[in-house]
Length: 476
Ligand SMILES: [Zn+2]
Image (tube, rainbow, N blue to C red):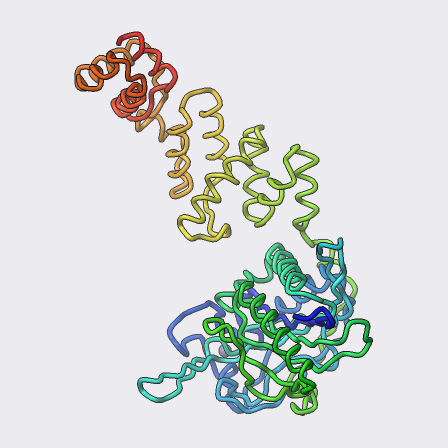
């Protein structure tokens, strides 16, 4: 893109809240489920039904708003956003336009030029729509209302971002914050976090905004980055050619790396919003706000700073340990129980992250107890098990949360440093590998490694490896 333009980006982020039930009825919000089984007359828009607000939705909205430095509208209201679409059985969506629950906040991101505040215009509560499935084979469209009425927060930023990097940093920041609050799992792939990107260009130095487009269907950070770069180029080419940018909504196709116009972008007035007459205003007393404020958790940066201070960890390690609240909690408990914070950090950063990747799991799914990891650290420290065995035992802890002390005992995994026993095993190895022994005597020193390997096998990996080498050498 030519340097003559400045990119202006604002984001609308939708987050599915982690409530057990929907926003206006008691249907389950569980992901998946047979189509149309998590439904009732309320969330399928039957006439005569009345919505009842889920208190937990307000609780989460307050937490996210306070964590992002927002002011709260202590009397907020729901409005109807009217439009027809088959995934929207009421023909309106219950949302907030006039008095959104949170407004005028900010989050701070790190950029190459230092910290930067991204202002939040507002955060409002609303209900999700159902899902349409277009069956090309049968040439028909099917609708599943399981998602209809799942609570959403929409977080609307000011147009404060200037590059794809800043957008990703902002989204990462929101995601971590909301995950730490437990308000949502924020999975882009499953759609529990979705971002619409509003982007326009203006000549460098100009104060006026250009015409913006909105891009939808961005379900990974990579897709968001590619879509932004592609749209910057597309608009720059239009402007260079003296053509206007149309205000429209565009759908990003990540496979084709290209976006296409979906519809001309509508304004709020097109939806004929009006206050929902079925829902009374939500009144939020000071005490409620104070209680939520007091229960905000320690967030990632503060936690990482504390780890560096209290446990003398590197900034890099502290960053990895605080990536997820779950791992951070495991770390703190294991460190306290074992009194070996560095070792606890190593197990969690090394083997735990490796196994999570290998098994394609989320940190949230970790299910072992810090007591067991602490016990394993003690076994390794006092030399009861060697490194190799410790890793195997850890895998068992990771998978089944076994008690390592009992497990090592039961499976006879204690390190063998009994010289007599090792000598016996070494003799068996020497007798069984006459060829290798011959080569060793001819001066092929390297073959010793092979023999040590055999001895480790003979002792089921439990020999103390340096002792095994010594004994073999002396016997040969
Ligand atoms: Zn329902």
